[in-house]
Length: 355
Length: 122
Figure (tube, one colour):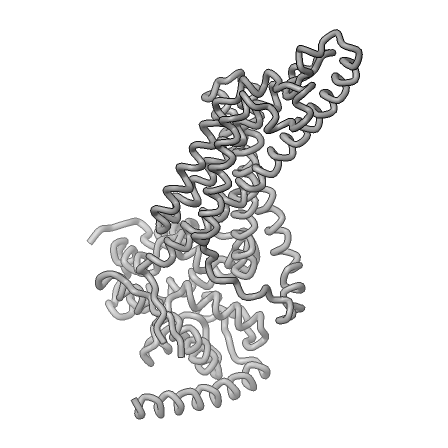
């Protein structure tokens, strides 16, 4: 039996420790006083039973049974949450949407490529700058979203909206998973093979791109610079389609390779736009030039104007392609993640539904 | 009828599941028991003892916030008073509390009867 000058001091120390974790309000002080009274009553009862004062160990036993100060304070204190159970699913949905569906694709397909273009081909530097930017943006976005939802929680703004919901405004039933048909893949393959052959014939047969205008227009320098990457990309697409036809069950490959294709296209188109944009001179003809045989002829100036219009049109179409591929990339990434999530859920053994 | 069952691994998971379900089951019963006991004025410790004597143990961290909640809902009234040279907070049922308790007891009996019937049928 251990001795202490005043064993009840232990009780005061205990209450002080509980008080530390409680908000300093009247209600909490009241609760603490009641807890103290309860514990004193327990000690009194025990002392009455034993016919003597309790020692430190016996008081410790009572306090231990009551629980650790922090745990007791959690039970006694108000139930505090930044975002309550009603708003929490919407909060996580918005957070996921902003971070995964907006920030990640935007940084991957836009900021990343801009960084790459400005890094003079230094991939490591571009990747570090992009990831750093993504981290900061995600952090700030998460902070702002949390703050907005905390305000909504306090003002009960969503609760009012939730009360006024209309069943007829519910979204339509989701269609069962859309499968890429064999016919669609076959068509894609045929078109891509034709495109590939067309691309191979192009350097020696400019008629295939200019038609009758090939009499006064010729292929510009950018075409020669980027010809090989385009041929390789076209070949890779054909290989991808062949694999998809041979292994239609490789769903992740089908979805993932589309994203890779989109990324490669973006890198290529981005480089073309950059090169074309940085070669603005008086005689600007990056894509299409006037045939050299016409130089010095009467209509040369007129052909140069036509070539300039064609060049600007091609540049605009490349910018349009870039935007289109960006959007396509985001959609494809979303589809891949959706598929992976579905697969994960269907393989999850933790819960099962029974009829 | 469709129900979702949570599959757990090992006895720890089963125990945890049981504890959670027991807690859910007890939650409503505790409120009813506390309100019933407080037809007679009591302070926290004696209330806990009375409940424990009848087989319903309740810890301090659960009882006092529950008492505060019931008081803020107007079902209980309380006052600090000195007894045996110590300040104690005494609780008793308010007139509104008496009315609600009577309704709750009727409901409890109805649920109990239904449950007994279901258990007999099973």
